[in-house]
Image (cartoon, rainbow over all chains, first blue to last red; front, side):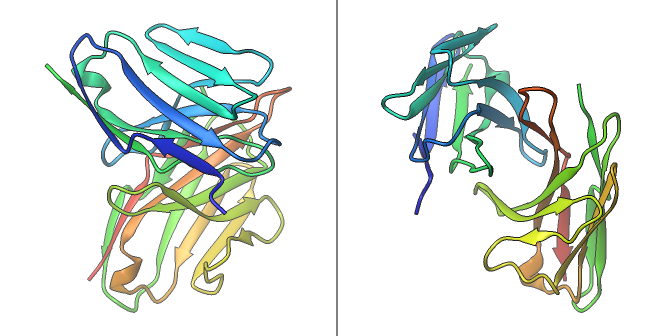
Length: 109
Length: 117
């Protein structure tokens, strides 16, 4: 059973635009909702995370929106930059970690 | 922030040999470490969960006799790929779980690229 569905698989955005990546989950026991950023040949790094008691969290250009009833959370990257080009994973946490399939983001200068 | 290191960062070995990969938490104690493998353009696949002082818990389909995991201390876990074959070539990543109050973060190492000839 697929616990986490991430979309889109790939995304191309103009510099300065908004990048939006979505994650849908099935397990209502998840209690921590992070997004990870991974550059080629490197390990993932925590970008931003949210707990289910809030609906939105913003850190600089990065925002998580959380919809508990819909069992979805999304990552918004404002003013996207070429340096944001990477693969992004959602990885909700309960007793285990479940990684999304990843989204390859390319920001065109 | 919490730092996790891996050694080596890359290794090339001959088929049939064994390779050991180390994962260290540098500035915190990790009671739980995780080992993942990642194929090109794919997501991370959890291989096993490693708890200090006890046997690792392997995910379904992962051969525990082939991928030996030892978590000897609160800062070190090792993964040994025994009798490696070309199909074991992959990017291996470890992570350590940080539990402080309500925090539930895991911090990832930089990964180890294994190529089996």
